[in-house]
Image 1 (cartoon, one colour):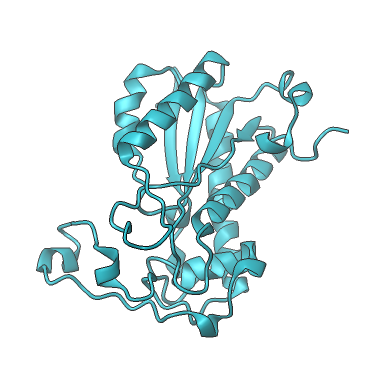
Image 2 (cartoon, rainbow, N blue to C red):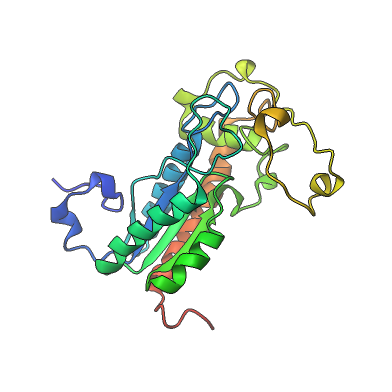
Length: 255
């Protein structure tokens, strides 16, 4: 019996993989970190994987031969190392890992890779800039939570375990979401630096100095219905990108 989801590598056998002309590999990448008191440590992994799989399914139905690779469960958490069991890997480690994955794909004739990122601390742009000249593989990245305007779906999106992320989890993995009455308020202490507060300067946040419950954003207004609409919009946008990418000649990317 063949798998009903041939676009999910973890569920697929060599007998089915070998004859399938995959053109685009999709790499969900998340993190292992605390998400307030009501969401699990694997929140970013669950979301990036579920969104990637749903987008792949939609792209597959439109004829694009895409495949979702197993999720990378660790991300950049350098400013959260004092939070128990938050696991950090440095950007240089991400580069080394991505380089090995890309090398494998390149040698096997899969020359398009899209990272579906689920964690704000991961920023793949500089990593891709360093890696791209060394490979024939097209490299791209999509932050699933920001590829659509989350303000169109929730009232107070929040930054981490707030209304948007909680709504998404209530839709994608409701059995792993604790009652909202157990959640902390997700209050964030603003920086004393004016430029950081206004958004034209940046510095990494010292997480436990910013928030008492590890959340940034109030989840109180989260609902599964909001999450369903938000996720569906992101999935549709990503699926369209995958279909478009699958059909393009890499020597003819620009109009």
